[in-house]
Amino acid sequence: MHKDFIYLDNAATSWPKPDAVGDAMSDFLRTKAGNPGRGGHYLARQASEVVEAAREKLSKLINAPDTKRVVLTQGCTDSLNLAIHGVVRAAMKCCCPESKIHVVTTAIEHNAVLRTLFCFAGDGLLDLDIVPCDEHGIMEPHAIADACNDRTVLVAVSHASNVLGTIQPIKEIAEAIRACCPDVLFMVDAAQTAGHFEIDVQRDDIDLITIAGHKGLRGPTGTGALYVGPRAFPDSCTNTRLFCERRGGTGSTAPGLEMPKDLPDALEAGTANAVGFAGLIAAMDTLNEATHEHEMTLTKQILDGLVKIQGVRVYGKPTIEGRMPVVLFNIEGYCARDAGALFDKDHHIAVRGGLHCAPELHNAIGTYLDGGVRVSPGSATTAQQIERFIDAVRIIASS
Image 1 (cartoon, helix red, strand yellow):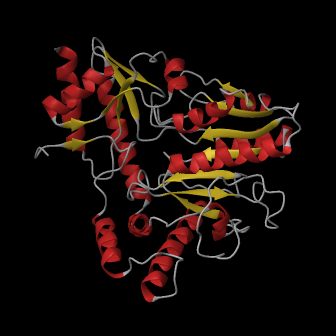
Image 2 (cartoon, rainbow, N blue to C red):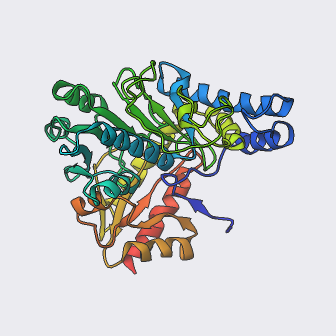
């Protein structure tokens, strides 16, 4: 790594991680690395305590009504697959053959949502409506609600766009959906917002929420969670609307060939990434509001700098209001991937150039073919580094 290397790709994965993350993971491997839930010996118990501590911490983060409703996963994409496949499969089992189920999602979604839904829609197994957004990537709550009907089983909405950083009015969307279709399951993809904003699944009436451990929470890759609310999985464990396709050992129910009926074991199979969750606990202990405020100050610096450079076009909201610390732009005369390569090769700056796994949004803002250059500062980014980045943009734009 070059001594002057600048990392501005925190929307993909936050870096550098707090020192406490590596320390906690190293300590786990030295002193706690048994198999959680599989055995009564000391190391197994220590590993189990780490896993449950992570569940407890994530539960408090989103104000879950019960820690058992937080299912630990390999990441946000894993959580989304678990939720979408689970809801669709359960609904397909219950609906009559002549009535096709219906799902509503939005144009701002990541491919982790769109591709997972399309694997059913493409085979004609469900009807899928993708609600368009405006030029800033904002969704209108009533447009989402109007797309629902009596066959709708799921509405999937990203809390914030990974491309433009635009934050969606989640509470208002939930209220609009409940007014017309009170039983529809409402799922929120919080990959970009967990760790940045307060999330309250009870206040905002969210049924399913997916979390990435390696972005705003600043933890290791391979960690995440899925919150499963009572509407999706009742306490009685009857009439569950989330079918688990995974099968395997859980450590809690040994005899029998069926999976356990109770959460979280009903949706968790196999050995948990306990060492990763040890790191995630340590990362979450370092979270504070000042970090997000720092990142937003740098985002304003980026926006203010880019708009002054001739030949640069910035997408999304023009101010930091209602957005995440994410900025998408293009430089006239350059393909986004080529520009990204120049930042890396000539200026030792890591940005993300190209399409960002959100094809419908790129289509909406007119960047479908080449995408854009995404820059996202992090907790360790400095104002001086942003000035260097702006200077690099200026050099590339003028060459």
